[in-house]
Length: 193
Image 1: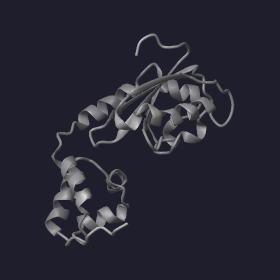
Image 2: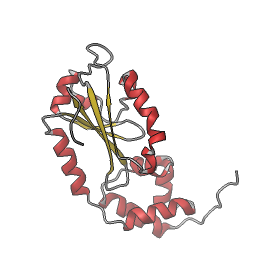
Image 3: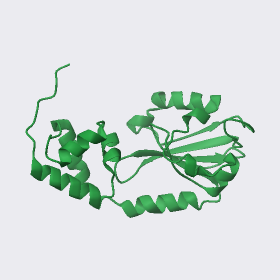
Image 4: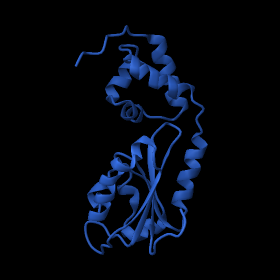
C-alpha cells in the first residue's frame, strides 16, 4: 500500500474548517469519526499544521457545501424521545445509542443517559445477531434496502430486558452524513412498513 502524498499545511483551510464545524455544531471527535481519522488529526488540520489527504478533502468539501438540515435532526430526536412506542435511534455501524423513548427506557428498566454514546451490541439477542449478519447480503450498507423486520426472543433478565417479539430496523442519514438506524419494537408482527 502506497502512503498518501503529503500536502502542504494551509492555515486558511484550517480556519474555514473550524468555523464551519463550530457553526454546524459538530465536535472534532465526531468529524474525525466520520472521516476515519483521530481527533488529534482534525485538530492539526484546524491549526494549519497538517492538511487532509485528497480523499478526505473531497469528503470535507462535500460536507461543507451540502445543504444541511440540523433542525430536522433535532426534530427526529424529539420525536423518538417523546414517542409512545418502544423505539430508539443508534448509529448504524457502531450501534451507539443516540436517543430512546420513555417506553424503551421502561422496557429496559433503566435511565438511558448512562447508555448514550455507547454501543448496544453487547445486549443483542441471538436473533438480532443473525439479522445483523444478514444486512450485508441484503445490501443494507449499499442502500439496496432501508428496512428489515424480524422476530426476536424476549429476555426478562440480564444483561438487558427485551420485551419485543418483533423488531423493525429503518436506516436513514442525519444531516452530517451519519447513517442511523431507527429500531422499533412490536408485540405482534407489524402489518405495514
